[in-house]
Length: 163
Image (cartoon, rainbow, N blue to C red):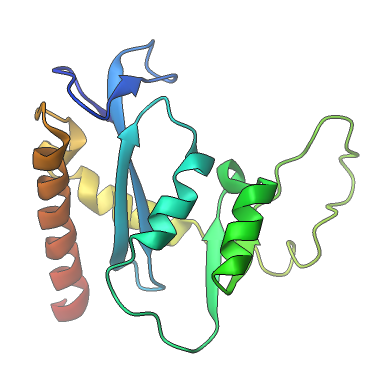
C-alpha cells in the first residue's frame, strides 16, 4: 500500500493508516520475482476482488507446463479458488482460519509440505517501494502512477535478467 496525499482516482481510505487516502499495488510474479501482471486499486478494496483481474492482465503467454499460484490468506475464498482452478493453476493459498474451526490441524491437504511462497512477491514489492514515485503516490491520475509502476517493474526486470 502506498500513501496518496493528493487523492485522485483509484484511491481509498487506508484501513491501516488512520483512514488516510492510499492506493494498493497488486502484483503477480514468476519464481524469480519478475513482474508478470500489475493491477492498482484503492487501499480500502479487499484483495479477493482483484485476484481475477490480476490473472487476466498477464502480459506474457503462459507456457503449457504446470504452474503454481501462491497467495496469502487474503485470497482464501471459494470464488478465488474456483477462478484459479478454472485457469489451470495449482493453487497454494494460505488457509484462513474460520470461526469455530479447531486450531490444532489444518484441513487443507499439503499446506504444511507446500507453504505459500509469498516472500518472492514481498521482495519484488520491496524493490518497487525503493522508488520515491512508487512509495508515495503524488499523481492524481491513476494512469500516470501506473506508468511509474510499469517503469519501475521494467527496471526490476532488467536487474533480474542482467544482474
